[in-house]
Amino acid sequence: MAFKEYGNYDAVGLAALVRKKDVTAQELLDEAIARTEKVNPEINAVVVKHYDYAKQQIEKGLPEGPFTGVPFLLKDLDLLEGTRTTFGASLYKNEVANHSGTLAQRFLNAGLAIFGKSSSPEFGLMPTTEPRLHGPTRNPWNPAHSSGGSSGGAAAAVAARILPVAHASDGGGSIRIPASACGLFGLKPTRARNPLGPDRGQGWGGFSCGHVVSISVRDSAVMLDAISGPELTSPYQAPPPARPFAEEVKQAPGRLRIAFTAASPFGEAIDPEIAAAVRDVASLLEKLGHHVEERAPVLPTDPAAVMTTIVGANTALNVRLAEQRFGREMTVEDFEILTIAMAHNAKQTSATDYVAAELAAFQISRRLAEFMAAYDVFLSPTLCAPPLRLGELNSMASDLSHIGPTLRRYIPGTAMFNMSGQPAMSVPLAWNSAGLPLGMMFTGRFGDEATLLQLAAQLEQERPWRAKLPRICA
Image (cartoon, rainbow, N blue to C red; front, side):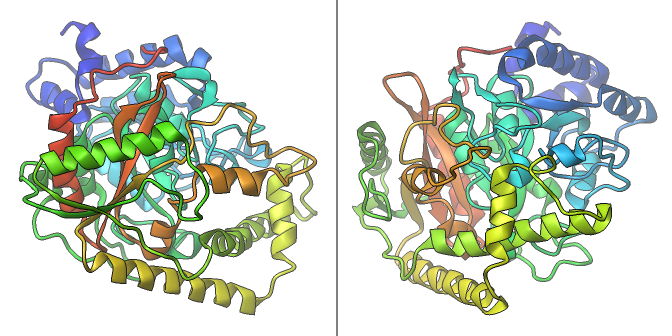
C-alpha cells in the first residue's frame, strides 16, 4: 500500500484493508506514529504517547471487530489501564491508571490500537483546549485559532489526518464544538447510549456522554454500534435502536420536517457569515425535498445558569477528592485558577440550589421535547462565532469575568441538548471567508440518532467535505 493514500481512508476503510491483508495493523500504527511526529509539534494535539502499548496490543493479537488494526487516540480524561491520564491538570501529570473505563474497554474490543491520548482542557471545562499543563492545541486550519474543546486535541488530530477517527466526549458541546472548529463530523449521542462506568453512573448530572469525532459519517455510525449499550451499573438506558446504525447511513431519510434558526437563543447578534451559512444550508435542505421552516424553541430558563451550578458542583467534587487523597488544600499550583474558583463558588451554593438546577434542566428538556413534537430535526449554528483565537478564554487569568460573556457569545446553543439528552451533531457544511470551518448543528428527537445519521449521509453525499484539507496536514 502506498501510505500517501492513508489519509484518503476513513476508519472503516482502513479496517477493510487490514481484513483483506492489503496492509497490516503494524503498518497502520507506524504511519499514524509518523504522522504524529510530523505535525504534532505544530498543533500539540497528542499529549500522552504510549506507542508501546499499541504495539503490544498488536503483538498479542487484536480482537476481531469492526475496526481491527485501526490506530486510535483516547481523550485525556478517560482511563486506560497502565497508561498515563492527566485530566489536563498539573496535579495528575504523572498519574497512571490502574484500570480501564468501560468505554475504553469497548474501544479495545472493537479492535482499535490505542497509541496515545489527545489533549483536553483541565477536567474538560472549557470550549477551547489550552490547559496550563500541556499548552494550547492549535487549529490545523489556522494555528492562531483554537481547535475547540473540550475534545480539541482529538479534533485537531483527526483534522490534520493523523488518524480518521478519535474518542471525544460532550458535556456541554465538547464533541460538536471542536468538530465545528476543525471541519469534522461530530455526533453527540442520546443520553445513556454509551457507557460512562465503572467509576461514574453519569457525568455532570446526566449531561455528559462519550463518542468520537470523525472524517466520515459511517465511522461515527459503525463506532456507535460497537460501543453503545448499557453496562452493569447504568442508572438508565437509551431507547434501543430499530436496527444497526451502520444500516441507517445507507437509508434515505425521506421527507423530513426541519425547523431552523440562524439566531442565538439569547437574542444576541451572531457572526453574519455563520447566519448566512445556516440559511444556505436551509435552502439546500429544501432543494433536497425536506419541509423547512424558520422556527426555534423558546426556553423557560437560562441554560448557562444551570450549567454553572451543575458543572460547578462536579468540579468542586473533583477538587475535594484530590484534597482527601493528598491530605492538603488544593491551590493554583495543583489546579488552574478557573478550577479553584469554580470549586470555591460551588461551596457557596446549597443542596437545594443543585436540585433547583436539576429541575430547571428538566423544564428546558420538557420545552425542547414539546418543540420537537412537530419536527424531525432542528437546524442551528453549532458556534455563533468563528473559532476563537487562542488566549480569548484564559483559565489562568486573575480576572475571570471575561469567560461568561465569551461563552454566551460563542456557544449559546449547545448545552441545552445536553440537558435534554437529545442526539445532536455538527456537520462541516460551510467555511468562512478566512478559511475557517463553520459547523451546522442538527438535533433530533430523544433516541433518534437514526434520522440524524440518515440526513448526515445525505448531506455528506450532496456536499462532501473529506477532500477539504487544512493548512497543517500530515
